Length: 204
Ligand code: ADP
Ligand code: 5GP
Image (cartoon, rainbow, N blue to C red; front, side, top):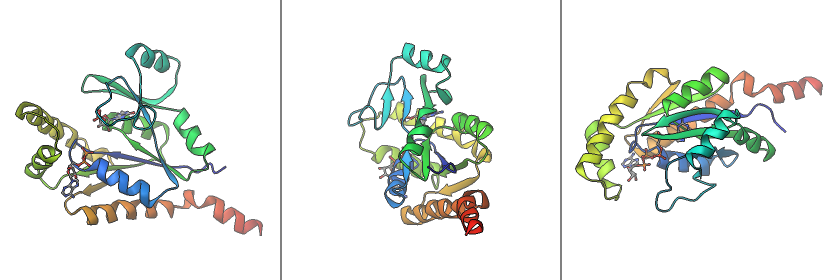
C-alpha cells in the first residue's frame, strides 16, 4: 500500500467547467479516485447515492461531524458538505495513487491546514459573460434570477483564487485539460512523491 497518496483539490464557480474537466482527468488517470462527499442537499436528477454524493439527513451529518468523521466540512448554499476521512482509507485500500476532491475554497483551506502536501487548483471561466452563457447552456431550467444569483456567487468564489496553488483558465477545453493534466504530472515528479522509487533504488 502506498502512503504517498496524491491529494488534488479542484474548485471553481458553478458553470466554469469543473465537472467536464474532472471527468476527463479521472478517465486519463484511472489511478485517481473521486472523493465522494457527504451532503445534506437533495439529489439532483441523474445523481446516484454513493457515487456522486452520500446523501444524508442533517441530523446524520451533524452526528458524523461531531464524531470527528470529516477531514473538512462547510456550509455551501445553505447545505452542509463534508469529506469523510474514510475516503482517504478507501483510496489507499484500493491501491490508488491519488484522490480528487471537488470541494469549495472553505474545504480547500481546511485540508491544506491539515495536509499541506495537497495541491489546490482553481478553475476560472474566461469571462463572466462566457460563464453566464455556459450556465444558460447547461440545459437546466434555471430562471434569470437563479442565473443572476449564481453569477454573483461566482464573483464571491473567484475572490478566493489567491489561496490556490494553480489557476487553470477554461477557455479552450482541450488546452485547459492539458494544463490540468500537466499539473498532475508535475506534482507527481515532486521529490516527496518519488520517495518510494528513490528508496527502492538505494536498497538495490
Ligand atoms: P461546472 O461543473 O463547473 O458547473 P460543467 O462542467 O457542468 O461546469 O460545464 C458547464 C457547461 O459549460 C457545460 O454545458 C459544459 O459542456 C460547458 N463547457 C465546459 N467547458 C467548456 C469550454 N472550455 N468551452 C465551452 N463550453 C464548456
Ligand atoms: P453542488 O451542490 O453543486 O454539487 O456543489 C456545491 C458546491 O459545494 C461546489 O462548489 C462543490 O465543490 C462544493 N462541495 C461539494 N462537496 C464538498 C465537500 O465535501 N466539502 C466542501 N467544503 N465543499 C464541497
